[in-house]
Length: 270
Image (cartoon, rainbow, N blue to C red; front, side):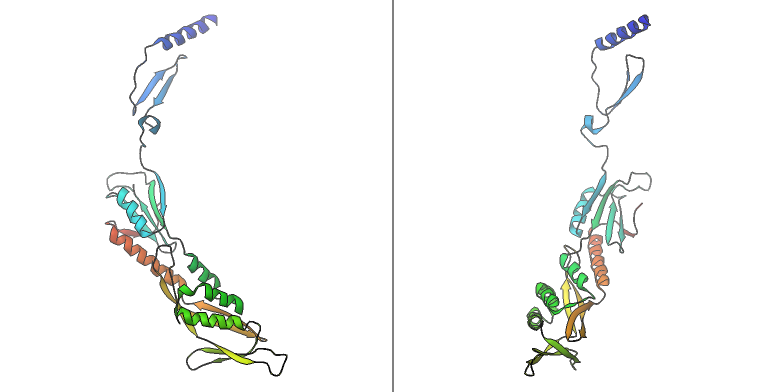
């Protein structure tokens, strides 16, 4: 046992006494250890070479212009692009398999469109009936989105609705113009209570950008109401908002297609 320990100690000292040899980054070396084992030293990694072996990772952008910028910098002839209309996404596999060579497919670019705050707010109220005050406040807060009737007319309607939140509404009449007239009594406790009416258009149009960086898209909204024991609640129903979102996505996709020479595949990459 003593002899074995002595031999190992001598071998270790001998190994330490060897003159140092320079090694070249980018290669793999086999090194004999003092205990008789052989270890590999890998100098191919970025720690020694200062360079990554290949590009990896997924970059997420929010508009077509950013997608085209990154794609133009990193894509090659074998890169692939996929679109998914249901998810409203576009994904580029920048290091996709070439026709004659396999590649890793780990460097990707994803366009993930983000809904605008205004679009989300219109959809949140879509199909709901709310109090006169809440409805009027909503119209006032979204005047920039109102197209027809114009914002000034809609503001007047909103202020009229808000001014009579405590009135009792007694009837609703559809006019020949398609507008809806609501008759109210200001003070029902007295026989001399002031009477009046509010006229609201049957439909109105809005223009809202569905996604950040996208153009505004027009939609028709149809007024909805309920008259229950003198209480009036109001709302609207948007006509096919998701179809408008898909139309906006199609325009985004067309902008990408115009800026690249790579065919866009319908689907999702592996």
